Length: 265
Image 1: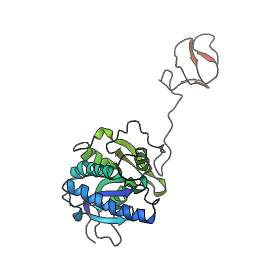
Image 2: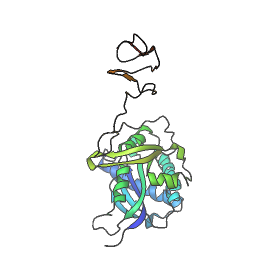
Image 3: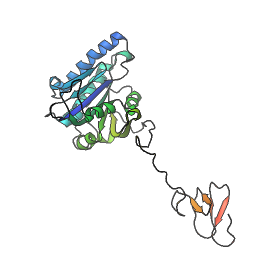
Image 4: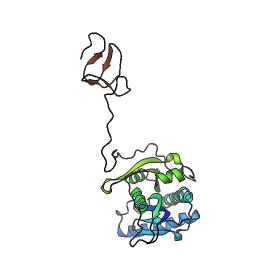
């Protein structure tokens, strides 16, 4: 067994591949490789040097050690999006190629008996298959690429060396696969689209395999903004008021007067 190497990893998957007929899948595979090769060549990347693991609807690529991460994320992905948009503009929906692209980096064994062992490989594939990434691409029918990157890639590359990307257009998401006990933050954008009005699907807030987060104490001290008022066994939610004869109208269903003589409960 060779020592693992730290590499840049790209996972790519075609949208709606399984819904195509046999001949449409055949054509989609041909166009997929043609478009990837053309986009890489146009930004000075050599696809021949990429180590890939093929699937019918996509691939996992492990890039050479000396590849520029900013060129891959900030130039190759936008160029791929441009080529996909141009290609799709003259085709019906069944003939279009639209891609989910995930980028991460980490240690990977290149001599595995049946693939590439390594947590980084699992991580990038989970990002590519995330529900928010699928839904974001579906929400923008003219787009060619939905790009999701790990937190490290966003912090170190997208924000510092964006090239043609706009970091402010990325949205932070939670990638969750509960059945696989996987939950990680990531950053998502649909290339050349404004996602400011797009909302990701609701996602559970509890960590995978952990207890649900503790709920805030809604009966905190009097006058705590937005937390309600408690006195004895009465808790009032709503307009906060403190001091003698102050009135608070809330969930107890009537006016409650606290403090001073004649106060009632």
